[in-house]
Amino acid sequence: MPEIGVFTMVVLIVAISAVTRIYLAKHGVVRRGRGEDIVRPQDDSENQRLREELRALKERVAVLERIATENDRGLALDREIEALRDRN
Image (tube, rainbow, N blue to C red; front, side, top):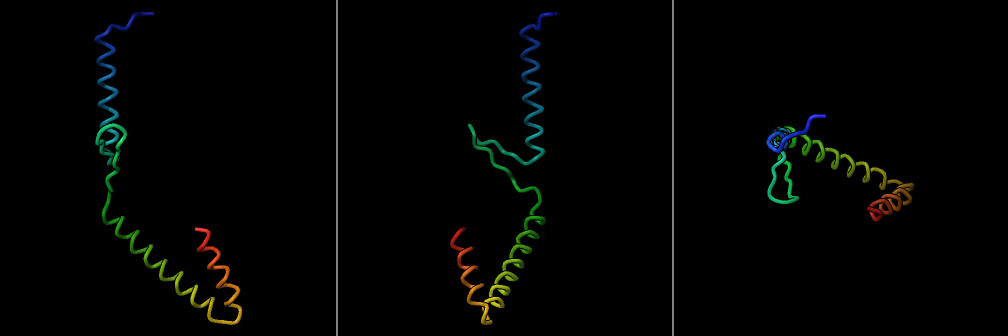
């Protein structure tokens, strides 16, 4: 088995490091020192769409909670909903 020279090892280390940095940059990871990786949002329009969808879902849940608690059986459901809230 041929021996690998010091120069070859240095070139391999630099190449691996460069490929890793290119991969991280492609996926939006920014390094800010030891162990501090920050992931940049890739698509602000996608984030905005997801925020709007989350807001709409929260409104729907609020309406469903109100409907569930308005009738006679609502007292038991209200207690169950409150128990679920307390668990989180």
